[in-house]
Image (cartoon, rainbow, N blue to C red; front, side, top):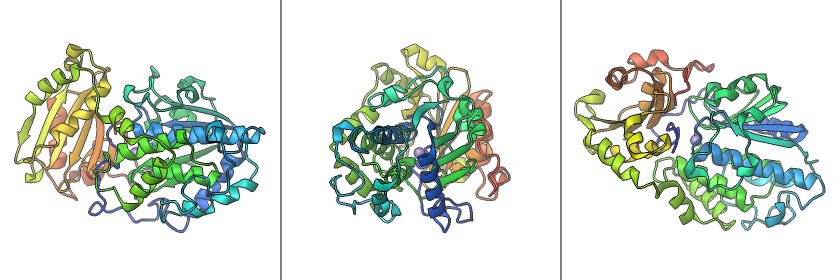
Length: 431
Ligand SMILES: [Mn+2]
């Protein structure tokens, strides 16, 4: 799926050490205060604008749609419609825990959320108007995400007010990741940033950032619970899509007991995991087979690359796609094949987009820190999964990347790391 920098994707946890600093995100003494502020801001809003990062992946779009469904359910309830949170189909009155199968202590674990959601009933739910979008033009929902319910909740980015009263961003590590909605974010009176990228620049007025979260969907779940909205099937589907996307179907090292507990909680709503997996991972146009053949046939192995840990890389050009009539997004899954090469710790795929820019995906099996290298090149991500955008020839891009990968921590890339205060990060929206 889309842009790879699924920060979390594949990343580990252990070695890549979360920056424990003061701006390390939600966990910490200020976390509760930030969550409370977020809920308060949402409660008081009459219009709430949601935006996820450009070329959304399952986590970005799934998390946003889940929150959009939740806000709509809450608005319906506020207008005297069905029970809050329910939204007709899953009906029930909300606020009181138990009803969503899991009886309160639903798995989601230690990350707070769980408990407090009962206060919701007494809170005056706002009947806020909701606008949800992402900053791509043309505005197109990625094909593999069209199975997610809620297309009717989405609008093209120009439907966004120039100056949103309240705006919430999903899975965007820096404001430029919002594409043409970046200016709106800068104008917003309140900007709630929901994200799990370690490289997040904390560009909101309320920053709900937890680099230890496996997906933004984990944080979206928390937010929805805190709003007191019951987890409906539609909400669960969006969150589940985010969870499986960013954990690589529960393969990556971010797959914690909490992740499985949340998955269990979501499955209790009746969503079908097999169907989700099929939509996300198991289908392509026939032409994809031909594309793979061409692209993999050109893959290069550099055993001495990445400081001796081995580098394998491939390119997917516009021409390759055109030859098989394929859109850009089909190139996203190529990295998952290229990374299989045992001889290389680092796998890289350069994907040429329709504008002729290279969207570069990088993965590490644990020895190299591709996040550091990609941040140095203007992108972002995590130690084991990252990306950046580049111009020039593929050879030039690889030369720059090789240089970053050739050294360990403290090498040239270190100079480009974002500072604690939220440095430059993804200058050109790469990751
Ligand atoms: Mn994510």
